[in-house]
Image (cartoon, rainbow, N blue to C red):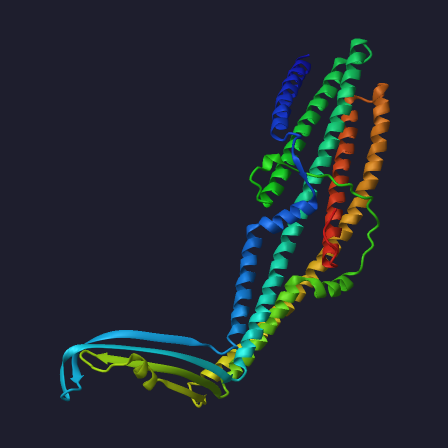
Amino acid sequence: MLRKSILALSTLFLTSSLSIAQDSLKQVWGANKKQWSLIECISHAHDNNITVKRQKLNTEYNKNLHSQKNLELYPNLNANSNYSLGFGRVPDESNYSFHNGTTQSGSVGISSQVPLFNGFSNRNEVRKQESLYFASLQDLEKVKNDISLQITSYYLQVLFAKELLIIAKEQHKTSQLQVDRTKKLVDAGSQAMGSYLEIKSQAAKEALNVTQQENNLGLSLLNLAQLLDLESPIEFDILTPEIPQLHEFLTDNPSNIYQSALEIMPEIKSSQYNLESSEYDVKIAKGSLYPSVNLGLGWDSRVAKYEGESDFSFSQKFKDNSNSYIGLSLRIPIFNGNQAKTSVKNAKIGMMDANYELQNEKLTLRKEIQQAYADALAAYNKYLSSEEAVNSFAESFRYTEKKFNVGLVNSVDYNVAKTDFTRAQSDLLQSKYEYILRTKILDFYKGIPIEL
């Protein structure tokens, strides 16, 4: 009797506590929320994620450098002028002597430099910077792909938590019906009070499980909202899509997927562009071994006025002192401490390193695809086993429930059968969403957009 009383009080306290907790949770995670689709989540992250924004800035920076290198192929053009006052002895034209006075002088000019030949270094600089710009574009796509996969994983975790909550509520509802039915049997004297208290205790545990699943759902939504950098995560919810019936695991083998991925994965393209850039580095370094020829041309004029000078004509002086020039300059590298040869050697080392980096990216991609394929196959096999287990435990639970209703089994056996059935349902859901995620990853490597 003491055990039954303690159990009844514990059940009453637990039930009231869960009711308060559920009311509070409903106020926090209310129903009036905007529901986001997976596409909306991914699009929002691409537009607002700080990492994506920083990579966009890096891309813009490389674009500006490329434009600058293009403009450096054209001749430059510069103008200059100056004006000065001088104090001291100045010539006196009247008696061919000197006296103290002020001198005003000024000049104006315009000049241009045209690089005619420098071992094609300037053109190779343009091509190098173009490769770096294209590499940064691919790096941006890589960042977007990474966050898309991460959001998809979090999104599926929320869907998993929602379905677990539905199962928890259904199980609690079933137990509550058994509580009501057992109470009537106890009142009629058909069953002992102990059976009623055991069933009521199980219902209280399942009510606790409902609250725990609600908490898990709230945390999953919070994780996704924080990944999206939302200011008000409490107002966030996702749209539950219709998940189609899972089909048999039929996909290309890892080798075929790898060959397709080599053509589309941005990390591979980025490494290829970086290798191309390093090849131009070698050409630029070799260019310094050749003579360079530059064309220079310009025009300038100077004017000076001495204090006391008579018959001064600014225009005439400006015209008389004007000067135009054009010339060629030739620079032949003979010996500069082997700087040019060392630069070529180092550029070749850089090219080899870039090639190793490309090979490493390919190896990493191949391993990732092999792992993704193995994970998808394992998830599918787990899903099949879990589906079979659910069917088995469902049949066992229905049989135990019928026997419990007629008093052939006790409440402990009933609760064990129900717990096993609930665990099997949970395992099935977990394997289901894991299989969906793994297949989406394989589709991603084949160039298929991520969507549900």
